[in-house]
Length: 364
Image 1 (cartoon, one colour):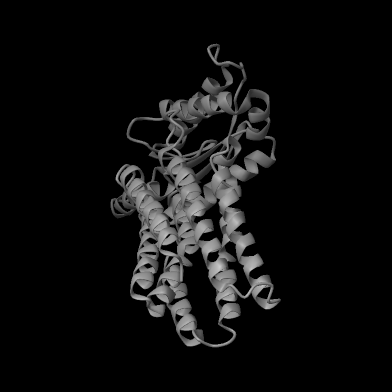
Image 2 (cartoon, rainbow, N blue to C red):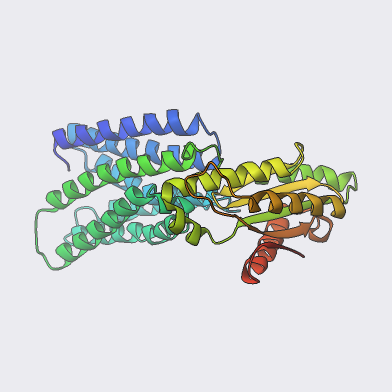
């Protein structure tokens, strides 16, 4: 078990991080992703408290349970990332299953000669979820501004410590299992601090005015509107998936700071081009989704107005660049008023417009 001073320090860090995530994250943006991330920090804090209790009571059982809780942290992180980007399923239940399985493994293996190896292999298996966490982070638009870098480095550190721990246990490079556990505890503290920095940036945005990553909230609102539209037999509902063309080239030409301004202008012009009753969501800094009830002719005029406004360079910007968009168009009637089908269809059409050279719309 951990030394008292290290355990108290780890508990203090976990408590502060939990308070900050709940206060600055969940309370500021009460949504599914912030619930999962707040739960992640609460679980880590509970694991730290369990470790402190085990040290005070010299209870092996408390220590095993606390370690099992801690190892579910990356699963909750991954679930929250999926929820934040608007994925239909977050798979939050996986963390609960993993926690129960690890408790059973640790309780059965405790006291056996091969327990250090069992413990390290369990930690390695739990750490493998960081591979998909890395995938989620690398697909996020914020990585270009460095917001994901702290969490990327912390995730890589978690994986490295797990691999080193397994190798050391298998090859008997050290018989001091407590030393390896203390190393993991320090690594977890670093992991939590880095996760807090990146996640708060994801939640609160970059301050440019664009709301990034509200896909999950949009799904809820859109599903309700479409259900009522279907009941009323309103057949003019349309969903548009709007993509900013050549984002990589734009970022390279303008730099990170100026690109943030371009992104904010893109989202402002999208909102200005459509009527006030339209539902507009910024899925990323280069992608917006619009749900509105208008005839085909009117929708075309709104899209054309958006394209014309983007083509006019902003004379007040540090770098004067003309912007263009690719738009995917899906009709609610053809998708049975299902929000997931609409999003998928519009996304496919937007991808087609991008592949065709951009600066156009494509309708399903």
